[in-house]
Length: 564
Ligand SMILES: Cc1ncc(COP(=O)(O)O)c(C=O)c1O
Image (cartoon, rainbow, N blue to C red; front, top):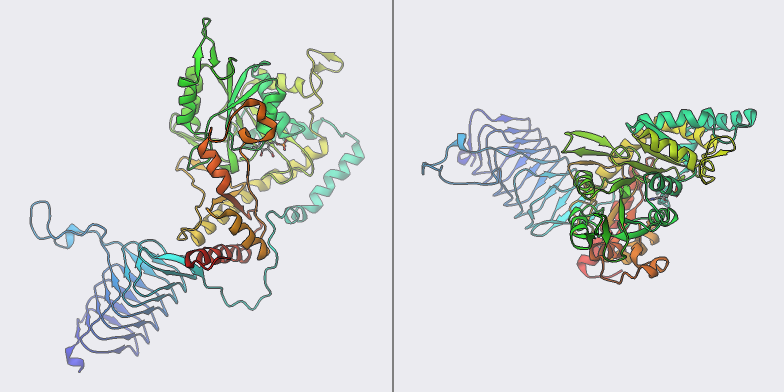
């Protein structure tokens, strides 16, 4: 019967390949011990690995790479051109030179069910399983089981694991980075005890210089918390009592506490649906529609009748706010811009206006950072810093943090007790050189989450615009059954968080601002759906895999309607 096969001489055939009948092979490569069923066509430049099983009636076109140990069911169709046409624009039949072959890879051990169609430019991950009759339109993660048209992830195959279960997974584990640096950190405590220089002094100055360099700014003033940093930055940049400061409702309350503590009144604009940070369109509408110039040209809020002085942009979750248009609008309306970078140490923004990447904290008039222990750069207690390129402003903040004194007991103004402890500065100085590595670890955890969860429609993943290099202080996803997902994960021993469950305009603390439900629909919807998954640099691959397995298990239960 082998006479019915059509196998051209340029086929690279491995050893012990078993062929059925009516097979058409040309220019391709077939690995050892592979078995090919009847009526299979494999085109030139396609590569089939060792020990594969290609069932009858399948069509494997140019550009397809099938790695070792892959099972291909009956009648599986591959496609290698996203926009196939019969003819060219001149009406001539297309030839090879008219199309571009797009590559598809089926990774080791994957299994493709009968009757599946796989569109071009797809990678099916290692050991993944594609259900019979599926249409695969996007990459399939490793170990995922997908089915349907378009194919969706039903769940992950739990790898056979002989090691003990990873156990409970905390939302954040602060112990490993401190143990890693234990001896250097203890040395800071020791030298603090030996010198008894507990407040201010050379350790604080050294850290200020290092952090200013890290943020690409001229000045850093270390203070006692992120909240104080924001309050001092607002006060020093000329926000006066009774002024309005515009910010977003989706942030930690410290943002608006600092505004109120500077004597100002917070007003809100809604967030962007995708980035969950300030919406440029909403800011523009607010300035155009909800504000007016008074007779002396001052920009007044129509809601409060107060002068609008500043905008606080928050780089929430370590994702950058879209600074170029915000800075442009602020300059057009004569407003200060203060960055709340408390969650964004080292995040970067590609300024299309300046044509370069800029560090968080280097774009506004000033910026506030928090070194609360859980932050990407955290102290072993409280701490914060203001960064700025304005030397005069930095000088004012130095006075504000220290009872308004420029020189001991000579008070230029009333200030605050807002200094940083020397020991905290010393500890931050030890940790700062490790921040870039920790950030890369966070980023690679984020990429891995996206890869594992990308094909699941039950959960929406964070969006990182091309102009942002986020630092993933938090990995915030969205689910329309957030409570169900949280309790499923809790049951599996996985801690999650909500950042934040009630947008600020609906908090009791701001009832007097008189914003009702529905005032900021994007922030309100987000608050009902967001769920933060475990994220910290030392999160292990096995821990992360367990989180993904459980998220997908919950998703498949919901899809199959079996409830919890
Ligand atoms: C967005 C945001 N702003 C401000 C702060 C205030 O920082 P701190 O807690 O150091 O006062 C935080 C910290 O929790 C924050 O997340």
